[in-house]
Image 1 (cartoon, rainbow, N blue to C red):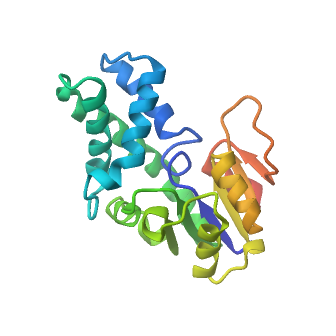
Image 2: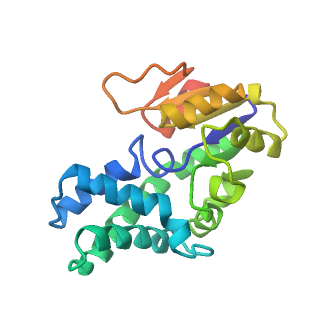
Image 3: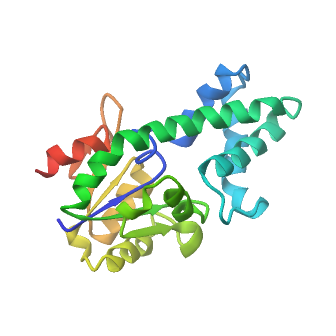
Length: 221
């Protein structure tokens, strides 16, 4: 293997847990115990429309997350604006705790492989990684919001491979989504490592199943 490509959300900022799954218990903890279906609808509406509703250029992680939370609160509990900052702060702190945990692993991996990111994001992921001190570890950041193509389209994976001068067969895609990461990588001809915290991980044709990026060193030898 010459290149390791990582998903961002649920892979680098958490161990196999999506933003939706991470946010819902935080909302409950601050007193907004909303029906799951209502929360899901508001979350996805915010997530899907964030770049259209807001100018995200140059925003860091906390500023981006705050806008996402603000839109959810406006939809579900407009009289509870005082909860926006506590929810944002807790989520961002969890992300940064994960970054701190993974950085030594990524630094060691970067000495053996070219690292990249392939993410369905809002268009400002590169700036977020720079602000968090992670950008120098990655040779390419393929952000769907910049490229205009989203996973599982093979084109976004092939873009990342080309950027690091690697053939798809020499790349491993590491991600937590079967539909986006595993299916997309398979379509691009890459090897796959699925991050899953489930007792019985989905079978998606992955070459490896891990519970965290920290396990990569052991499986790759």
